[in-house]
Image (cartoon, rainbow, N blue to C red; front, top):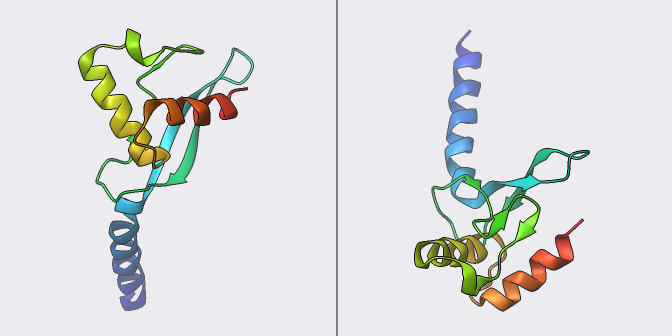
Length: 100
């Protein structure tokens, strides 16, 4: 019984250690694929675990100049965490490569 408690504590400690470095992204697909979650390594440690692309509306990716100021800030943060890109154009190129 004591070893189970130690293993549980060790698992919780390991989860708290990797939490800042691992994230999952919500991927929206067409009607056949549906929604899936893709794990990834963050480029900067943070406490946020779940990510979604703020520039994606359904299957379409909205250009940066059509986003509101708050959506642009969210998109920049998303790109820095997910891809390590500070420039929206570089991030859009990565997103285009991932497109279905």
